[in-house]
View 1 (cartoon, rainbow, N blue to C red):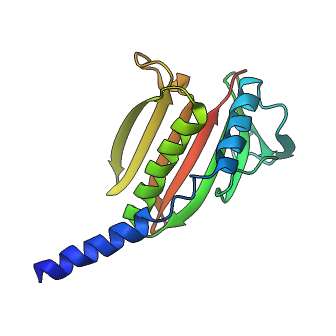
View 2: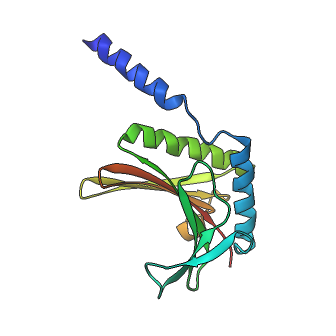
View 3: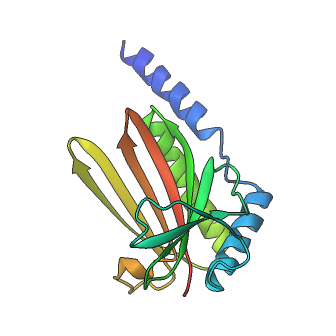
Length: 171
């Protein structure tokens, strides 16, 4: 019985590890374009305005450069703060699959950024549901999450695990 579970774990691990959807030159190139546009205030890839859920606090726009394999994305311009792009990835009912996707995304961010990144991760459990934020910095001593270059978030909602990526910009 123990051998059966070991074999099953190995099969699951191999199927999860075999697909790295972020390990593509086109992904790295597009991510670099989004990073550069963010440093310029997201003027190049700013599409038409979207109806914001919080219009008194932020404006939202379509992002004209999709990041494959993201399902969707948008630009958010919070009042008085730096704008950011947010990309949403396909949800999964499998936590291991979503965790692996987050790790692959972390590696892809490091590759595309071409400089050392320092990661600070925190996980909270709210109503027995995990909520994990990872903040990426280019300075090892940075401790203000608002100064992160990237943020990934893994959360559980409606019986699925979700992953999102934020690319932070400048005002």
